[in-house]
Length: 96
Length: 339
Image 1 (cartoon, rainbow over the protein chains, first blue to last red):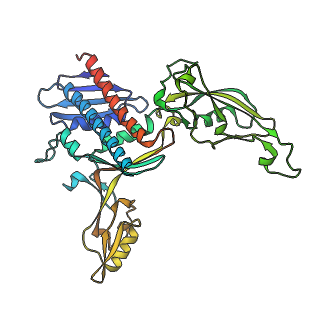
Image 2: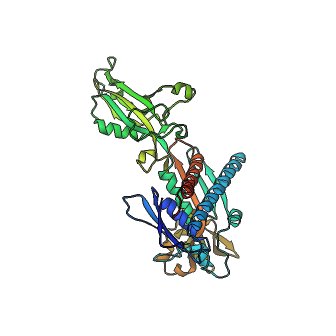
Image 3: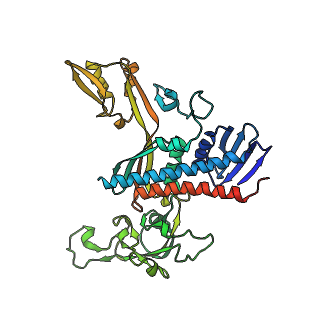
């Protein structure tokens, strides 16, 4: 992870060893945050697995906060999906 | 409203593809992320489970996350596969490198969660990250064969090399670590090479743990795909010959014809079966009477495993891997001080 930004509001993360798999899902979670004015990601070059992830917040919120919140939200989603999936598998097997 | 939750298929293209329900886009809609609302709306239905294939629905999730699961299932769930092949003797027609390539692609029935990744630069391989297999086979002539027979099954012993001839050679303390495990290829009848009398193959193989991103032989699924639930609406009632024509336009079972007061009326019976060939748009009369769309957040996943791990375990592992990725970045955020 490398970060460089102009001021506290907008920040560009360079995430190594990542691609659309995490990039798109994280972008979706960060966009759902009403404090975020701009969020986007891009692949610098397809031969290198690095993504540029940029967040810009309205107001004066430091930009690391939506990033952290997005990651936590994504973890919450995954946890819930995992629990629901395993519960459904158990029910399906029980009633078969 | 339609734009928010349906993807519409027009005659020449698809409309409303991207998710637009972000906060601030629609006045009056509560779009900000709410874990509780997500949990209420989300559900998983298992449709069909077979030994190596699983079909299930995920309702209430977005494309970005569903696609992330699919990508992880294909490329980032680790498995064990043959990586290094030490060739001691190969006098068969099949070249060394071709044989090594074929051996690498064989799925090995070994739970990858019991093993570690091999460290970079480690040539030897320790018992915690390597599985050793041996393939030693020699073809000979059958002295009892009839004089004029030309069937190779009768004339020669061992002329076909199958994957069942691969035997596990335990390394170090693997016999204690896995006392009742039986590591072998998933399928016994994969043909590796053909031999004739006098030819022999003697190779030693090392299997390591890897992911599909590195080489496709490490991918644990035969294929993993998803599609969106189709949604067909008839804008006007359709009768008689138009109804018959409509039924032929869609896959069998989608449209059924009912007899109401003597007239034949078409009704959408089961939109899920449709494959959306858009045949309707080729008929001028029917073009404007039907609306083809897909429900935006209802995904029908279909996962087929190669047999290494059962498909539901694969899906669980994929979700855990996505969580692991998030956790990694959270840890880095906390450890690196922000300037």
